[in-house]
Image (tube, rainbow, N blue to C red; front, side):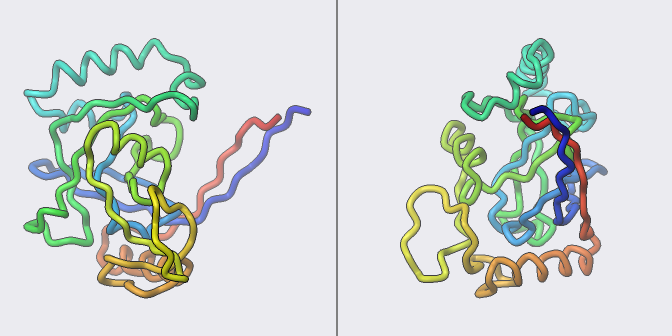
Length: 207
């Protein structure tokens, strides 16, 4: 049976300023409680900011990657079993929760064809400690992996931890369980003026 299903997602829209530019990368996330675990970002090849923020040194590599992505279908690009590929833009976004002088605040921005311009904002914040896709990409490109959610029972974490738990290494909501941390983080991004709580809806074909 073929039908279209409407999916509802609750989360936050968050703006990450781009170092050296008067622009920000805007993302929608259902897990704002993991903001301290963001170690890179990925833009869709078609994202208009790619032209604006790509460094001169990375321009040729980014242009070549975008040409390759342009001939792929959306199905090919979003195949979960397929190896995720991307290329650095040479630009860095800044985590709005951290002081810009903090080394952890600088987040490399990549272009990846598995991100689609027509899905969400066309940009994703990547938390490889708690998302399988981000974890795979981080391992492939040698990007940092930071743990910001731990099992409530204190069990050791092996690899990527994708379940709910307790916030760690997240100064403004350490010790809160995942639902409470989500609520606090959404309040905080609004207080700081770098985002807002949001509900999104999208239609997906379903077999």
